Length: 117
Image (tube, rainbow, N blue to C red; front, side, top):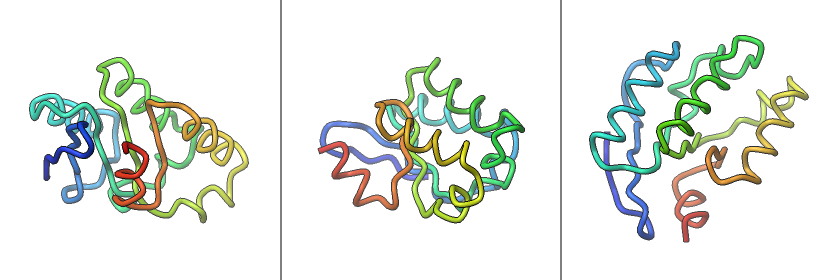
């Protein structure tokens, strides 16, 4: 994991590690972000299991809510077009999340840096 300052925001990039398959896995990352003084947790799509993108499992909602509760913004980095093409609900949630300030779905680190700029 790498902690960096992007345009005045401390970001924990959780690029490597085990898949995030449970709410506990997500809480561990939120805790790591808090421990590093990061106000934003960036997770690559490759670390998320299929359950994250199946909204009926509740995993995505639980992780997003935990992040908001602990005041750690969450950025999912990578291509989610296949997942959003398969689910209207997910597509709507991604669109709504990107309009807010707590949870974002962005294509890459450069897009995150631009969003924080």
